[in-house]
Length: 324
Ligand code: NDP
Image (cartoon, rainbow, N blue to C red; front, side, top):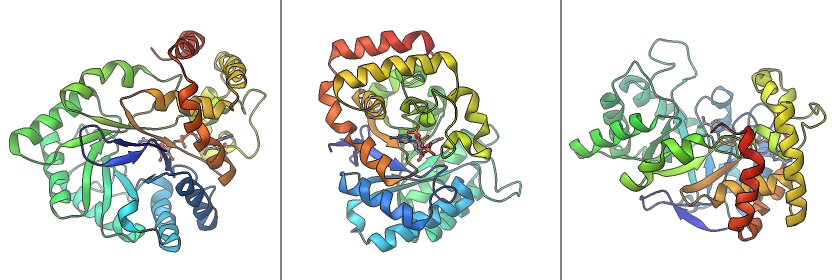
């Protein structure tokens, strides 16, 4: 495993990392979380992604328990959380990035995670009802208080990120250093086009999500929805059209052939493809069981096999069906 700088920041994250969306608190209990996190750690992962809203706080609680039981030195791992949706219903507790919510939400997360600070904290979505300046000051204060070390955004537009960065620059505040966008073979536009100038202009790093498009890029949805898969979870029904899309599953079948030629599995190929992008600091992988973690993290070995010629060939296969 290699460790890449988070954009221009000094923090080094493993090029593949591990996240807990959907799984912790829904599919995965503390015991399974420990097994998955231990498998990731053994493969060299140092970054574990989380969010307040995942399983309404339960995901943070389970990760906190797991970290306590695993007993790794705090210096060696990076934990993140994210704020926006909230886990309560009040007008200042959900769908906001206002100062009041952010100031109180971090305390709840730290308590559930049983940590004194998180390494990274993301503004999980932009909030059109709070001035960006108010959010930037609140994030700066969170860092000044030692409750978080770095901050960033998730699924913000390039202009929103630039506005936040410029406010921080103008007032000498802690700047956003990372964005967390969706990025996989079928979803490339934002990372490859919209954000392009931000890598150079402000040194923004990327920790990307859903490298397997929620499982589509494993090939498991080619013949319907497996009973034990994310696609079969009732609250994930909104993903079903995408997971069972005929044209994309046709592409998946062709990609399976490419993976076979390379001597790897399709998930490994899809994850390695994301990590091949030099602007990506870390590809956040997800798994519902330890065997998937072990398989997926071997994607690292596939990276040197992705020659420019092969990358071109893969793009030719996906291009008619991606979002560009
Ligand atoms: P993926 O697209 O890689 O999907 C992971 C899921 O695919 C697993 O939970 C599992 O689901 C299935 N899977 C994984 N590996 C295999 C395999 N080898 N064989 C078969 N099935 C497999 O990633 P996620 O969507 O989980 O995203 C990764 C992380 O990114 C999240 O945990 C979270 O931390 C972060 N994220 C951030 C978002 C944001 O808005 N900032 C949004 C979404 C995610 P199953 O077995 O149940 O089918």
